[in-house]
Length: 108
Image 1 (cartoon, rainbow, N blue to C red):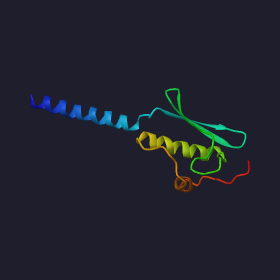
Image 2: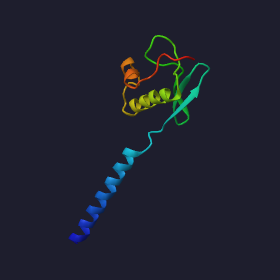
Image 3: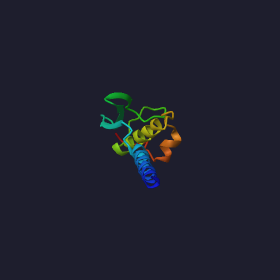
Image 4: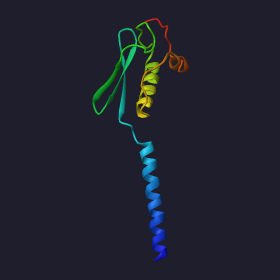
């Protein structure tokens, strides 16, 4: 009887660990789409086919400049998604743009 109880405890522990690991690695459900504009790039963030954020300009700067390249747009979009996943304010700061080396002066 004790062996069966031990077996159930071990099996239950393994199942619990697998569930926790799966939940930590599961897709958050947010989708990022970087798109080309006439003067640069922008991004959209959606969830379940519902558009949540459409960003045609680099956030946190006074001038309305588009992202110089798709990589910069993707970096910031992914940063916004990480903030949303952690239930943080998705606002981007100038310091975050600097930290991620986002180009602000590009020839369009």
